[in-house]
Length: 331
Image 1: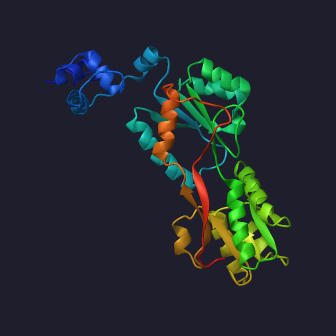
Image 2: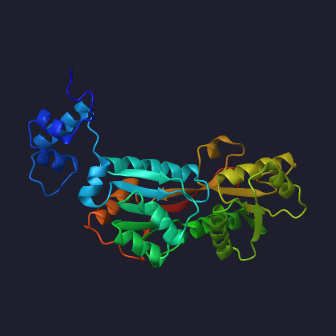
Image 3: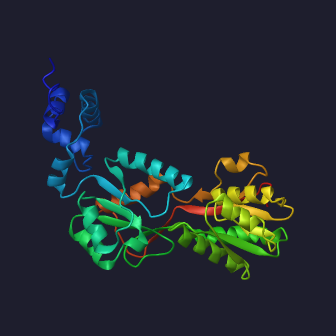
């Protein structure tokens, strides 16, 4: 009978199986860059750990380092779209390859110090969160309690922490320029009514108005009934930026049901370039996002901040995506 079958596998078991010391196992599995361990020995330790099914003891790591290997991502109030979820999935794999666990934390509404206290229960090495949920006191509390870096998702630079800036205004401007160039003279932009997304919609509307100041704002809940009322109106614009592909598809369906031709009567532009954008009819003209930093590059930056190899400077801006129009049939 295997002596480890009735208890969890420990680093001592891995060391015995690999023929090395327990300290060497620790150096290898914690990816200590200063340890003088040959690549052959590193691979032997990794193979032994995989063969035995070794899982590091998170509580022991926390006691040893003062923090866990957790990168905490408190979920946003608004639902996550397919584009962002795909990016997070890629980042999760990259974090795992570096010894971290990306935890998407379900509490969506706490802000400030109350939020920081909730997050600190998991002793995260890093926190990635919407900028609007942070305050000076909450950032200070996180750092003083062992969180090595805090990163904000934001529409602009943050005075508190480094920020990953989403190009909402540039997205709206990209769509508006195309509508103007194709001859539209009555522009509108959809602003979703859904909490959280509404703020992003307003930023995209600002981008549209930077190109076409008279652009009309249309507030829309994601429902067939509301889209139908807009489509049946007598004062339809001739060009609409629909916030994203999902709202564009909703709106185009409502327009078609009302007998309005797309793009002959109303041109519609979405954003995200979802796979369905190529499959629907008319094929959707949309704003595609080119990666300016890959998930691997972003994770490497955060890893460097956690390890103290890179400064975590407030006001620093990291841009993940640059908007680019993909012209199809709807506009």
